[in-house]
View 1 (cartoon, helix red, strand yellow):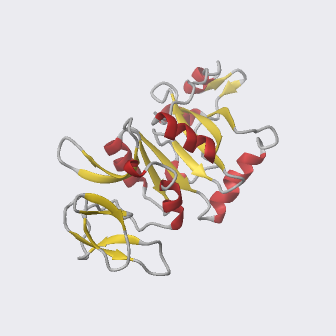
View 2: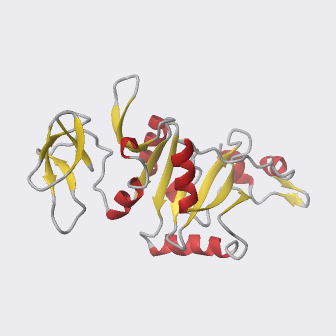
View 3: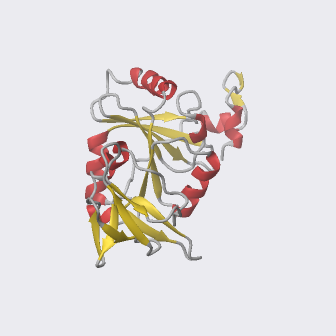
Length: 247
């Protein structure tokens, strides 16, 4: 963790420091070596949040682009379940930064727990993921400036498979000229379609910092989507009939 409590004040790790976990209240010790980012760890092997993962520099760089009071906020559900959000804005939007592989069951569990959430996924970790998104960007990059939208169905060919059909916004940090590629649900209950949101990283950060929310414009549903839903096209059977099972 980046923060622990000392006399009820949130502080960052420094050599030999001792603090208290803001989630469970147990003792934490500072880890300040040369191989990993400086961080706090529970003194015992236990962890109070089984969703919490070791941070990389990629995590820390993302979190540092938002106000400190938004970082590592304990989110508590009505039933008492608690988890630490990477970032939670003053408008209640949660940002979760994901570097390592995550099973689909846990993606769904976290998405349902936070509800108002955006995932930011490091797609630079695996060569195959990078190549898929690079191919997608190449079709648009000549005309892109800082932001663009494109209607899409579930982009099963270009994004990592565990993120297929996720019903909350997912942005992939491509590492290609600071471009992010968003996979944004649109009218899921009706057609299971998505909007592809191409966005420069600094635009995303600036918008969230200024508003505390993510509110993309809605796209008009193309006339042929309801026909795809029914398994037909203007010329015959629809090869995208799986859309009917996405919602």
